[in-house]
Length: 109
Length: 115
Image 1 (cartoon, rainbow over the protein chains, first blue to last red):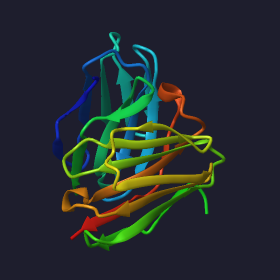
Image 2: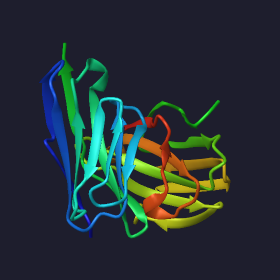
Image 3: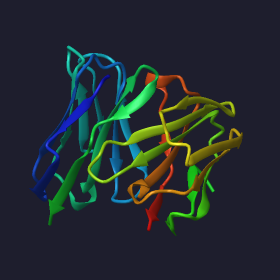
C-alpha cells in the first residue's frame, strides 16, 4: 500500500525565516494536496499539484511536485506567526485520499 | 452556514453510551467522508458515501455505524466505544468520490473522549 512520509515531523523557526517541508511517497504521485490544520480543527486546503515539475504559490507559500512525481516540497518564505500549525500532504491511493503524518510548525515572534 | 459543519465540537462519553456525530455540508457536493485523526498518526479514512451510497468502509469496527440520509448530511453513530477510540473525527465533502483530482473540504471536527 502507498504511504506518505513527511519531514521534519516538527519544526520551530524564528519569525521571518524561510522553511521547507517535504512529503515523500512510496509510489508515484497522481495529484498531491497540501493542507494546513490548526490544532484540534479541520483541514484548510492550500493547493493541489498534478504534473511533475508543477509549482504553485499562494501568498508566501510555494509548493512543488518533483519531476519523478514521488516527492513534493512546501516552502514558506519569511514565516509569520500566522503560518503556525500542522501541515499535511495528501495523495490519491487507488481512489481514496491518504495523508502523511503531518509536520507541526511553530513560529517564534 | 457555509462550508462543512460538524456537531458537537466536543464529546465525552462512557464506554456504554450511545451517541451520534453529525456532519452537514452546504456546498452542493455529492460525496461525504468520515476520517479519524489520532495523536501522532496520519489521518485515517473511515467511510465514503457517494450519492448517499456507501462506497468505502476501511475495515472500521462495527461499533461505528455511519448513516447518510441525503447528500448533505452524514452521521456517525457510536456505541460501546473503547478508550482507544478517543480522537478527532473529521468530516469532509467533495463534488464526487473521484479520487485524485477531487478537492475535499473539511469540517472543524468533533473531539471525542471515551472514558
